[in-house]
Amino acid sequence: MRHLMSPLDFSVEELDYLMNLASDIEADPGKYAHACAGKKLATLFYEPSTRTRLSHEAAMLNLGGSVLGFSTADSSSAAKGESVADTIRTISCYADICAMRHHKEGAPMVAAKHSRIPVINAGDGGHQHPTQTLTDLLTIRGLKGRLENMTIGLCGDLKFGRTVHSLIHALVRYPGIRFVLISPEELRLPSYIRSDVLDQQDIPYEEVVRLEDALPNLDLLYMTRVQKERFFNEEDYVRMKDFYILDRKKMELAPEDMYVLHPLPRVNEISVEVDDDPRAAYFKQAQYGVYIRMALILTLLEIEV
Image 1 (cartoon, rainbow, N blue to C red):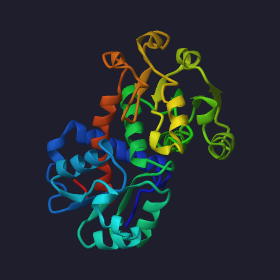
Image 2: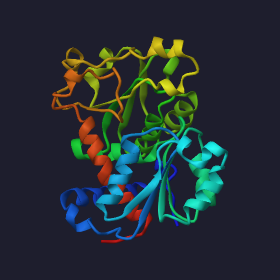
Image 3: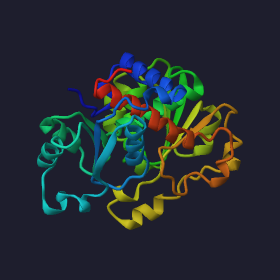
Image 4: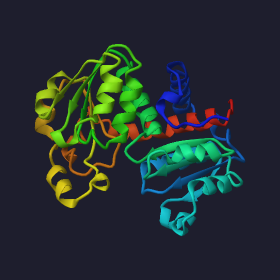
């Protein structure tokens, strides 16, 4: 039995297999419509979510399976003090696979240690978000035709942004990757990721504050929101929340083949006027998320079609 806690749980070859499977699902969804008939996915979401929870559920339903679970901790026995270990032991009696999002780093790992079914980490605090990373990789490959030899701008909340942290861990395994880290001083990428991942592997990167300075040189721009739920006080959040706003004027500085990704939800960081730009790919990204999660469910359940 296998779990997904981090994007590093899969080798580059296994990631290629997953993405190829996802591409086949996109091309011929009917072929997979009954692959998980009789199987159940449990979604255990201790934090609010729209895309991650619903895309996991859509993925299982598209495969002919069924879903159960809860969407907030308040609607589960966690509100009564039940531990993650006890919850997963119980859920293992009801479902064949589960996706867990939790506000505490490491909670899905605890669940995996006590589970009798595969556990998917659907986001744990500011730590990892591996299924979003799989989505991002599939989207980049689909748009650019490759996952190597690119300059990627990561903009916004690089300190608490688990999507950014996971994506960096995954992309450094591909040759020719260079990062431009765009953030205010207060939201810089954590030093342990800079030193333990980028510096240790000699990955070229630069840190800039102004988005305008970075845009002309990017192959891809990955925008993130400033996450209110990660701040300790309202004052700091209000001061930082509108630090970056990507609008039509800024997009004029970017190359014609530079795509914009965003894990969503967005708040103010991408103006709605950018949505009509052919380089805006964040809603396509959400669609890719269903295909890759379908491929992941099939793989973890060891179902071949």
